[in-house]
Image (tube, rainbow, N blue to C red; front, side, top):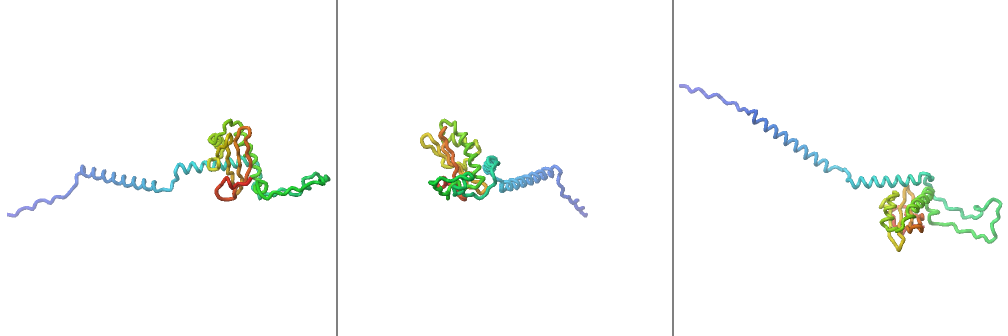
Length: 211
């Protein structure tokens, strides 16, 4: 008697088992994609918020310098003042017999600042002196606050220190190849702000300025 072979079973998967497996595979793919995106963002060259703030601050400072000097002539090589006293006399006038020809300066703001810086320096001096004039107790903190309010950033304020009732400070206003700096003394109604000459290049050092 022949035994009839048993029917061959075909391996099949139940739809109920297949659905959880597909869902798990999709979740794994999403997780890997998210990890890859996170690494890309982390390894990017995006600047920090502090860097962005610094760029905005520098831009605002440069804009303030341009606004103050907007009525000044463009930068040009400095010109030494004439040393011949005859040039300053009215036409037909005779100089006194005991006239002594003054020596022409060879250094200092008169000969080392260009036309734009020479013009802008007076405007900076006026606006700063007016802001400090009514400061009864010119502490370094108060002076810095007023200078910041006028647009002068901390990176350009140097040598801020108090001596008695006076607070001394220097401002580095070098811009567009200029050498302008200011030497200030905040002392209420005796406030004085004078122009000075900074090194053409390199960091600003208060001890190296020329007045």
